[in-house]
Amino acid sequence: MPLPFLSLLAAWLAAAAPSTSGPTLAREDTMHTEVSEVLVNAPRVTLDEILDRVARGEARRDSMMRDQSFRTSLRMVIKSASANPQLFLETISQVYKKRPDKVRSVLLRKWRMKIGKKDKGDKDDDDMQLDFGPGMGEEVVNFAFQPSARRDFKYRIVGRDLVGSHLVYRIAFTPRSPLDPTTPSGLVWVDTNEFVIVRQEVGFERSPVPLFLKGIPRMVIERTRVGDYWVLKRMLMRVQTTVPIPKIGSSFDIAVSFDDYKINQGLSDSLFTAAGATRGSESSR
Image (cartoon, rainbow, N blue to C red; front, top):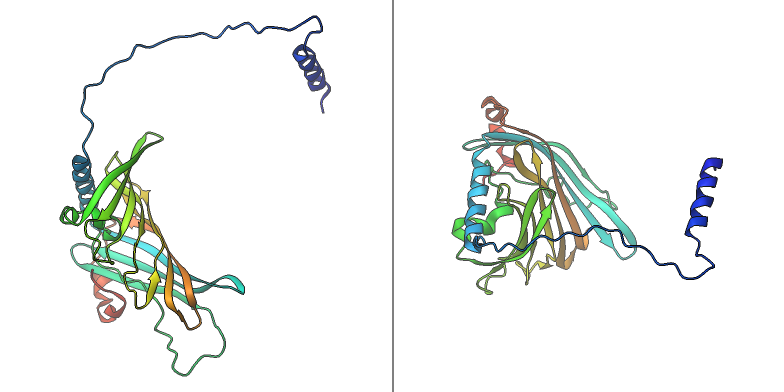
């Protein structure tokens, strides 16, 4: 330790030590100031107006994109009582989209854990794969905030957070009717700079498919900003089945990530024509 620092520390300790002549009172030298209260008469934005702005913001985000390409990876992680979580399946694809109706998905990599000896009836092409449609709207994020969905859900503001220079609303939504188990409840984070949903958490009160699924306790969907556009970043969910799936078990996690975005690059129509004979890996929503 440098000697000058020791001298400074010793001087500070000596100054901080209590005096033996009696108690020492601190002298208050802090400046005080007061600002008079101002009554704000501007009305607070109503929930209905916020919902209208979110619908417009999502529609604007959708209309700004003419084409896009991105890389997506899907990973399934299985768990068992006797082992740590293990990667069971991974697929990586390159996806191309172009308005109004063109889409192509190219499988880049597929890996699956080998567990035991392959059964005679097992197939190599029955693994889980993602299907993509040509739309840019990302309905998996905004399904509950489209104008047509207002009659199916109830909404309430549960919080307002200031994140940097962004005011973020947290809005909860629940089904108006409890009869349909396939309709989830959820919570979204809305960036009010553009009124775009940047995060969503979804859950089901009951299993949407009770014959096969015990439940989906939680699903998280996040977006990220790429240039001027908000796009999908990742989706996470945990799935519990009613009966164990061979080689997988009764509980597993699915994670889907999206990266390497290129937006409005002027994709050629020939990119999609060449894939016309392989529509099996593509589908429209």
